[in-house]
Image 1 (tube, rainbow, N blue to C red):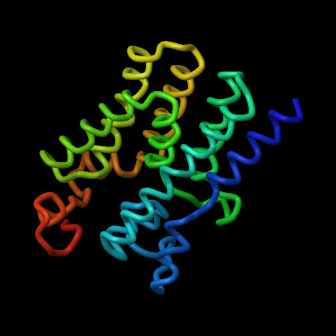
Image 2 (image 1 turned 60 degrees about the vertical axis):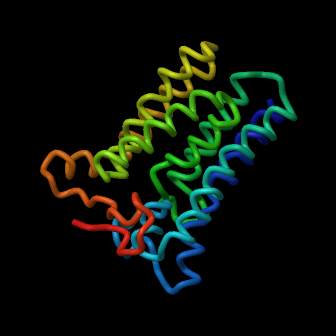
Length: 207
């Protein structure tokens, strides 16, 4: 019991590391007062630029992967391993180190489930890229990719622990995109600029 509590607490603590907030802060940008006020990679892209956004994306994904890998080293209990994935995503969404004001959890979920069910995450990643290429909405691509992950997990893995964890985390992440969904419906959501899709240098976002 004590081992489980320590693992879950450590996974939450790792997930709480707000790399986007801290790295943007080195450039004089407070993500919580700028752009979407989100501390994830998308707002870093919007406010600081591609390089910092890429670094934040990798680090946020790494948080989830580390939580799962460490849990697997310590225990063979699948429910506890998935619990650490959930704790890491919860830490990103409600980080103790940043006043419980965190991101939406997409990258951390991808990292955690990349360590659990890598093929399902790969196909979700393909969906993400396709939706961005077609619509230039990062939020819509994130929602579609996250919603597809539990289905891929069910088909490719099928274990109750990983499948239920994927459905629960997908529901959390989609819920965190509630404001984006409202803007997508009324047509006010920002699109990523064509320069990001084509590789040409221009501003990262357009209205």
